[in-house]
Length: 112
Image (cartoon, rainbow, N blue to C red; front, side):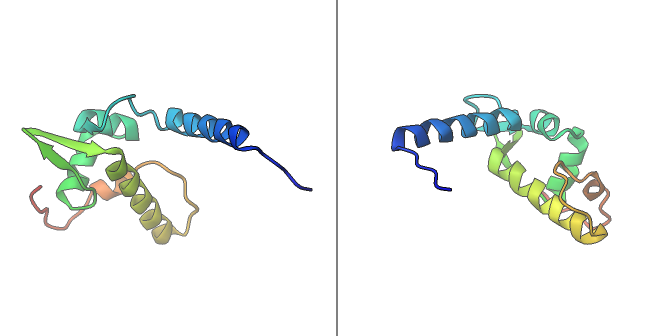
């Protein structure tokens, strides 16, 4: 079976898929970064979880003035790492979402 798409059909399909993915991510339109409260809500965890992960060096963040901000790339990378680590620890399949167990680290916390 062969499928043939012209370039306009392919563009429309790609736009539709990208729109669906972006809406599933629940990222505010036009925003480059989220503060710690917004980022925690988008991951479905408490603000203290992101703070603990940041201080432990498990998630990258940036300071902008007095605020700590997270880019989409920062959050997606951390989610991928957290999922991979929890998978390795318990042999489970990827399930998505932040790994709350990461917030209960016993190692010293570096400054952000």
